[in-house]
Length: 117
Length: 114
Image (cartoon, rainbow over all chains, first blue to last red; front, top):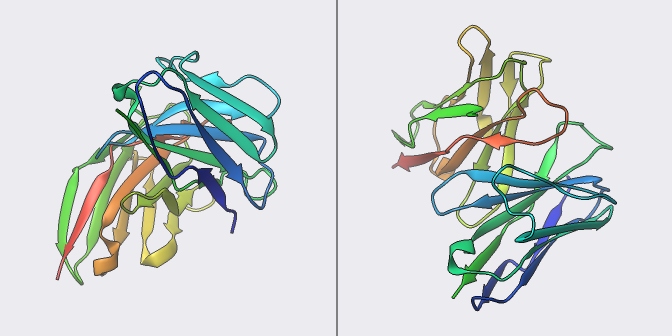
């Protein structure tokens, strides 16, 4: 089956610094990737849709200057949390859509736990 | 706008008992619907999906769900719970769009007692 990886799996950073999270589709090409945020014991909140070669589409209420998304290749999307603050601490999950297979199949990464101190 | 509503944030069953996790959707356009399972500190795994081909959908690990348009429901069931089923379950909808964005319910934590 299709595999999506995320790196790092967990990261601790100091307030004010920036953190980059990578999302890779390992065995398929993903023209579209999605970024979600999950607070403890809560649901996943869609943050943005990442399209290869174009600007990301952000959901309402998500600061695009705070959460920079780049989708430079068909297998890699990155989320950079800029000037991180403790309230940005969360579990970030990406998913990728395999257009070559079932058009309604999304594959999720294992998530990245971000802790901002 | 709320796309899916999961009734019951926690469900507890005994091992071997029926599992029923409820999900209702709200969409003016018939959506595609999904059930995902999440184990602690892990990503999501697809259990099953409804894409209008058949109203009764069978998934992995013995789970199934039935799409009922008249009730706007897509409840998840399993005839006999196993200890390994204990996890968080999420219902999701694409709101009838083909863009691929998924909108998740609040989740239901399933506990299975021995």
